[in-house]
Amino acid sequence: MAPSPTGHLHLGGLRTVIFNWLFARHHGGKFLLRIEDTDLERSKPEFTQSIVNSLNWIGIQPDEPLVIQSEHVPEHRRIATELIEQGKAYYCFCSQEEVIERHKKKMGFDDLFVKYDGLCRTKKITDADLLKPYVIRFALPAIHDDVGWHDMIRGEIVVHTSQLDDFIIVRSDGMSMYNFACVVDDARMKISHIIRGEEHVANTPKQIMLYRALGHDAPEFAHCSMILGPSGEKLSKRDGAVSVLEYKNMGYLPNALFNYMVRLGWSHGDQEQFTIDELITLFTIDGVGKKAAIFDQTKLDWLNGVYIRQAQPGQLWNRMVEDVDHPIFKTIKWTDQEIHQAIALYQERVKTLAELAHELHILHNPCVAYNQEDLLHWIKPETIGYIAQIKQILEEAPEFTLDIISARIKEFAKTKDLKFVNIAQPIRIALVGKSSAPGVFELLAFFGKEESLRRIKDLLEFLNK
Image (cartoon, rainbow, N blue to C red; front, side, top):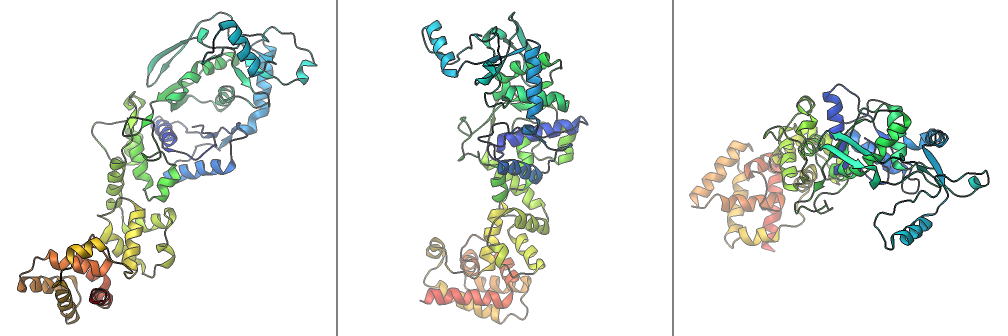
């Protein structure tokens, strides 16, 4: 995987990493990571750290030390000079404006793709020339021919060199262009397989010619289709095009996101949930489809909820403290046992750890406001009297256990000929400020007698005002 540190790692890049890592693991190979930072203006160290942090969080580390491309610029330049000496590259002193102007004069109209006309290809270079600004161009073979490869996903792809021109391999600032730098580095790192996005298909014939010019065999290529939004258009931030670390902060479990991203474009029958070991065993490029994958936020939320329900409360708490930014972690006064009991109350109800943290915050702190819609729906004139009577029943309970609480409240509802929900929902509002909450008896048992009665008393005072 060779990301550019010009931004955070997003979902498309994450899926590419996962496919590369699983492919390497499945075949007993090595997964390598190279940071391609030769775009000096846009590359930032903080983005490099963000990419590394994203991969660490998802559970992926390279099998060899991280490679920083800019550290190998002298090697790139040395090899570019060798190509010039071999007649496979040349100095070019034409500005982009001059190239465009000559093209317009020759063709009589503007083209989207402006071919370089090779003016400097046979130019005799003097020492004085080298004091001027210049780029280095790759010299295409004089005889046009097909450049093809068998793509592991897309099958046979062939491009005729007549569609290309003598492309730049070293910029005027001395930094290597992407196609040249990655080929030199791939050769040095002994890269055997490259799995990347379909936007790189156009780069592949240039890179194959560079491998040949350097005397190396080209790696095997696999180009994955794009990830699209639900509407079939390019993924937007609204649909899910946010960074991996944002998904971390939103409370998605790393294994859940890993699992979901694998299924975007790869399948094994109808199976949806996989362990990492299963994925390593089952993953093959043959299972990666050619069609674009559609990102489905609802499905990701569902899968994350499955992983949350399967986890131990202690594991979820540790993950929340590590990943989610929420005031609950600074103010909480519960014991570890109380924390785990509280998580167990909501584990079946939430889809993200951020949502869980929010619910724990409500549970932990006395209500400062009640949901107005719930009050209007569930609190009738006679309800205040029923709540007061339930408060008295709970005060007189010999023990504040779940069984005793539930038996007494159910008996009260039966005696008053009330639907249980008309009793349960007002109590929920008293306890957590809203009617959407875990079972009312479980909440009362969790809070205990003193805190439950205090919260019910607070609601009664609020309603009487």
